Length: 86
Image 1 (tube, rainbow, N blue to C red):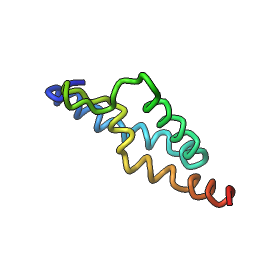
Image 2: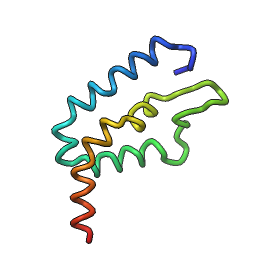
Image 3: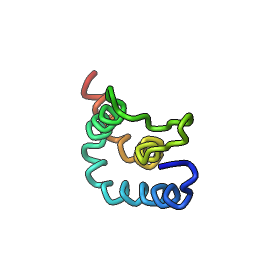
Image 4: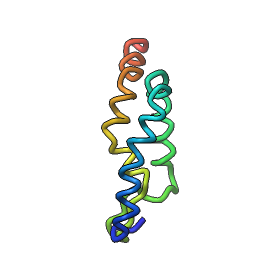
């Protein structure tokens, strides 16, 4: 999406928390592996940039990655994974 498309950016920004809330039961149980795989998918080689200021592009993935709600729902399984790995 282009920066100038304010309506689309606002819709995506509003729908990301709704999607995270809908997926919250799954994220509370298996959030760390899901988030890790998602980040690997977004930042894989050859993938388009999430935020490309030079071309004025922003991806919907940007709003998911920067979502504090997603990080909050994934925190319990991340802490549990750290405890188990020790």
